[in-house]
Length: 366
Ligand SMILES: NC(=O)c1ccc[n+]([C@@H]2O[C@H](COP(=O)([O-])OP(=O)(O)OC[C@H]3O[C@@H](n4cnc5c(N)ncnc54)[C@H](O)[C@@H]3O)[C@@H](O)[C@H]2O)c1
Ligand SMILES: O=C(O)C(=O)C[C@@H](O)[C@H](O)[C@H](O)COP(=O)(O)O
Ligand SMILES: [Zn+2]
Image (cartoon, rainbow, N blue to C red):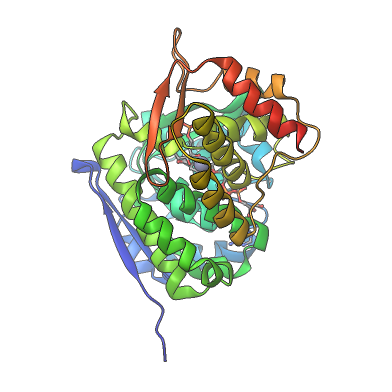
């Protein structure tokens, strides 16, 4: 009989180093994650979809603590400043002291907001990530980027605040809708597309197994992506340089998500389409070949991800949203492009007309 594979990945950041545990049943492995809790208070932040499924299992590990839960409505639109205020009020109601812990139980929306709440309370308390989507397991729970959206754009407010541990119970993926699972695969493919051509080829070979959620392949994909991300984060925690590469597809993708009012495209879907647009722009600028873009498109399609901008998007509006990207400075716009599979690159000072041309073509073909 095949046993479920387990993996531990260490994020190495000096005294802020932490483990990422990946395996089935980890929510119930209380002894493992209780060891991280230092104080007597805990606030579990989750949402109205995830809490009924998994909160009770987590709460059994909180016996003896003063704890409560704060539940968001479901959806990206609720990753808001207003909800951070309410979560902080929940900590106040709990009389949470500086050694309190926030537990983020859910996908990336919950994790980003909960992490930012933890960063704000008393100028920073512990938090544990318990990701329950594929996307949050392979990306958002690791690396310490926390924050919320404004009407003007995605993730415009936030802080770098690392979790104390990441508990990725892959059993929670059993209840994850297929579309959300596919969206998570976009961030796996992104890691390979940025910096690991061998992993990209492995993903091509295992696309069917991954689309079918075959567990051994899945754990290998999660762990490989996370090892890559952990390495980048360890070298450049606050995105002074190399870490910006992890934004491949995101300048286009965030603009698509925002313009679509967070309903047209999921984050991972925006990243999938955004990576292809970045590939096309790279081609236009003579940096890469069409063969590479087509290889990326084939892999995204094999997983069932969208590869085109949906109908109804306005290229000029997308360009305006892209100008507010956090990678830009007063004088320079920066985008992540590539020289081919596994060779992403930070590129500054791109002529806007070239970006607009790519957007116009994509919106015309919608
Ligand atoms: N901080 C980072 O480094 C980072 C990285 C990538 C993405 N993000 C952010 O993460 C967010 C996207 O995360 P996401 O894709 O997890 O979206 P999400 O948090 O909205 O979750 C997706 C959907 O799945 C539901 N869900 C979650 N777990 C479930 C489960 N086990 N069973 C059934 N349903 C479940 C949620 O309720 C939601 O409806 C975006 O806000 C994005 O900006 C952050
Ligand atoms: O960890 C990072 O660094 C990333 O860029 C990961 C991205 O997948 C993620 O979507 C992140 O939230 C984007 O951050 P932002 O700085 O572009 O808001
Ligand atoms: Zn992302």
